Figure 1 (cartoon, rainbow, N blue to C red):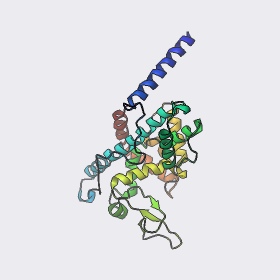
Figure 2: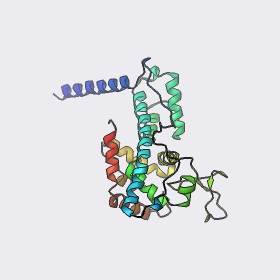
Figure 3: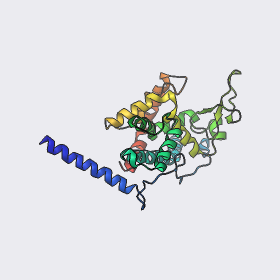
Figure 4: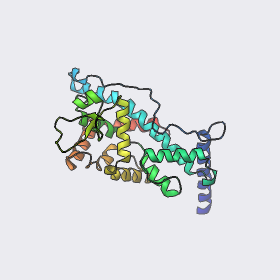
Length: 271
């Protein structure tokens, strides 16, 4: 009975994979490869509105969340598309992959700072650990905290909502409180979209957030929900506040009921 059940499950799995490959292919039979870095932007925002003009605190918060959420959703969906293509290519025998597909995989690996080039299960495992979503509840929380609800000098002058640094002269805005022996600047972005994109990439590639990626991968493997509250536990290195920052982020998600945005995002995608 178990053998029959296993055979049925195998057939179903093969049919699902086949259907996914069919849906993702062009008329020529090639899996459609998308831009690695550039999401298709429908919600372009060159700069944030002036939230300081809104006196009602509850209204200000909701406008902040509702302004940023469509952008976070859009950038996450692009990451998910990349991930889905990687999974499809992983299911193709190596000898059947085209040179174009291998080059694309290596471009993704370079973009996501995976050191190895295409080849073997470890390559795909490392890649899929990095190419994945950041829950909107977490992104919205960090944007609000790091930018002071979009009122900080860096968010107003450089669309920097997440406190990200850069390290080449002229790459951003020099902090007024920077120590004389330090050379970092606060990164400047041409749009809010680019700031969100850089934030997601930062969490997906920076060595400081390896525990976040491991936790997310474990949740996927166990078919558990990827939530901001769970991933927040790994962010002690995001701020000099350490564990206090983790507590602050977790409380913020709960107090503002931000899991609702992650739920909406999950409902909007085809799993």
